[in-house]
Length: 380
Image (tube, rainbow, N blue to C red; front, side):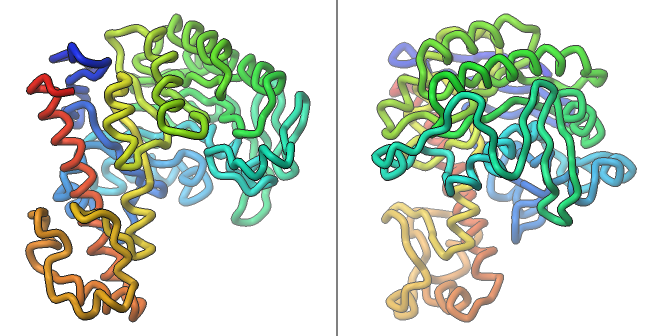
């Protein structure tokens, strides 16, 4: 992989660049849509290309469960398996340490819930989740499919990702829960840093390997992690974990990390990408970022448009024989109307979800494309 910075903003930390891989070039900054199980739900790979998507990220843990990395490897690895000709990332499985652990125990998303804070619910040093076990060497999971015991550590994560064969892979880490106290996060960080070094040692392929910076909301731990991970021989860097309760705090936290990382290597923000986040995180110095928002919301009937978010399941849209977005030129907006899409959704037809998924991805990618143009013009 080759990363080149083409332009740096004079107004912010934003920058234009490109990631060159054996499967093509990605213009940055760039949204990375999430193809969890080697698919963008409801779309085939050709349709995903038509949404202007440049690169996708798939989930190592879920592909390990089904169909298994050996099956993917026998099929010619992920690109051939899913017929995706462009670049691919795979995560490390570290997010599942959170989602299947304390995330499940507390019913948490990746952001802090104010109600939980007010009730004083926290995760203290040496606490363990109910359904997984985290130790010095890695994490023991129970398969959500059949209950079998699974162990994934840094060595195992790299081995799985090498068989999957994505262009860019990530080091195994512990993504800490938003309610974790300082002492818990500090100990967790020691594991993540140790695992990062093991991942570098275990890598046998020529895939680009990104290290992941953690540290939760604690500035000193974020800085410590950024300096440590940034000092290792990674090809790029992921920024993981939680980023506070508001947009302003998130921007500052990302800047803490970015300022400590090597300038000439790419930075990827894990799991963040609402429309209202994008300009902020790009101005904070992020090159790529993955997010399920456009696809997740589409399957629930929500369209992102120049009018704002529209809930096409609402009956009023059955009476609107008009384009989904008058300012959009995607295939859906050129050929289908709100009344028809609303009908499909209310009738439970999967094509309604498909049409919104296509439009939302096109809209999000166009939104980032416009931000790139504004950087070129010196406006951001």
